Length: 342
Image 1 (cartoon, helix red, strand yellow):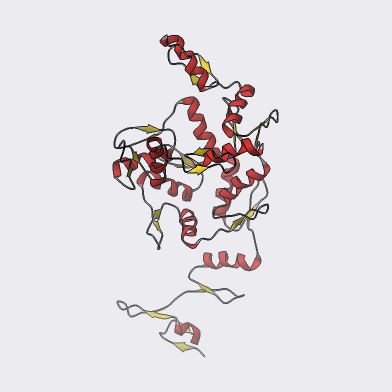
Image 2: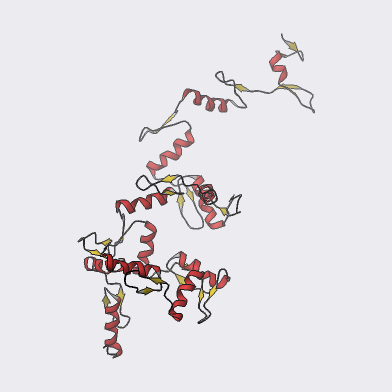
């Protein structure tokens, strides 16, 4: 049934429900809407309706002319094409780094601004990226969704699982191009390279002391902050935690907590006792991956490997001669000092 609102226009019952009357002009105007004929969902614009219909069709409307991959939206195709062209249109005006995708550029800018919009609702810690928050929350929940199918050990991050698996495979994909030493993690290689370069990129903003590893800087800062400080009451040396301080005090007291149950020899550190026990068991768990020679201690393996690599990390600061072992450097320095060893 049609009803007449004015002399020039007529509307049916459905359109009447969408009539909007302007208070200024008092004119009746219908709200235009676009309905999907498959699911009856309505949209404000025709373009939204067209975009929605591709869901029903399963249509990938935009094809990459280079690799043939298809996309449902032109914007997704545009971002994809940059993989082939190498185009990176988003430039950071602070450091000059470029990005192919605006979202990656936005995340990068937070490095400079310090903005951390994602907050943990348990402890309040803030993060610049939502994925880092998701990983952090697993500390509180104890969730470890990544499992090793060899030994069953679980991890909160997939990267930690990947690193762990190399224990089973023996894979060390990160190799130093100076001395040839190989590592299971890229971060370990980066830290190792600083032995060759002498680089110390982590600097204390209070006293200016520099460190090659970020963890060393974090430990050092406890000295200034006063957090978790432990003092040796004999020599006054400061430590970041009680365990380190306790081990240090054994130098003064001569106390050795760890006893070998075979020969009764005592040790101030548990790791020294474990190494000592290899003498009794004959176990040599550390093997050279070049010549297969085996060693009871990791440090002996490291020294042995220098035979193969030719690495000589110990330098004489007088004549610049290099040595593969610290003890050889010490003996050499006596030539310069005139000191005689007996």
